[in-house]
Amino acid sequence: MTVSPGAGLAKGRGKARRFAMQAIYQWQMTGDDIGDIKRQYIADNNMDGDNSSVDKDYYAELVDGVYNRINDIDPLLEKYMDRKILSVDPVERAIIRMAAYELLKRLDVPYRVVINEAVTLTKKFCSEQSHTFINGVLDKVAREVRSMETGAQSTS
Picture 1 (cartoon, one colour):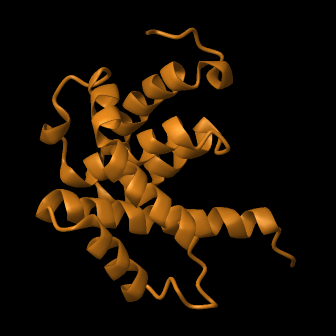
Picture 2 (cartoon, helix red, strand yellow; picture 1 turned 60 degrees about the horizontal axis):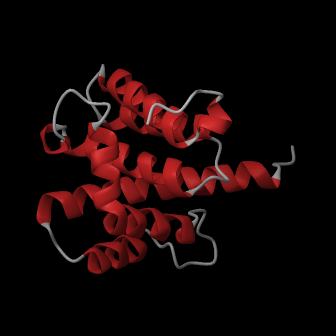
Picture 3 (tube, one colour; picture 1 turned 180 degrees about the vertical axis):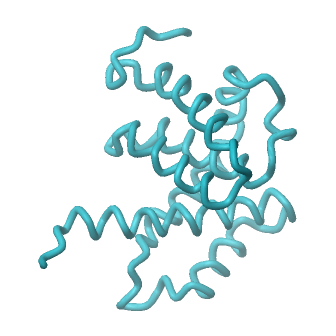
């Protein structure tokens, strides 16, 4: 059976998202230097190896993107939440921030893929009903920032 190049890309990006979520979580919890955290995950997970199946560039972009755009991401998310971002479980917070970055800056990734990947991570790493919250907030964000793609009218 032949695996399509698109399947390899999707798998590599899926792994990149998982590692990026973990790096963002670590940064949120420790406040350590984001560059050090990013390099640690690259080394610890052999992302520099020729046989690495992780999309290292995508991983780095997600980590740096959340870090550099946090002042845009958090207010956008809070518009659609009934609480402040800092009161959200730290793992959920890392996932939703990362997905919001993708919705804002990675227009080449369909919004449904972004939301689905975030929900998948949430189901794996968070409490049982967390995915409902994540899905709801990200759906509203997508309708705002990708109104042409979602077919929604902009709410801003």
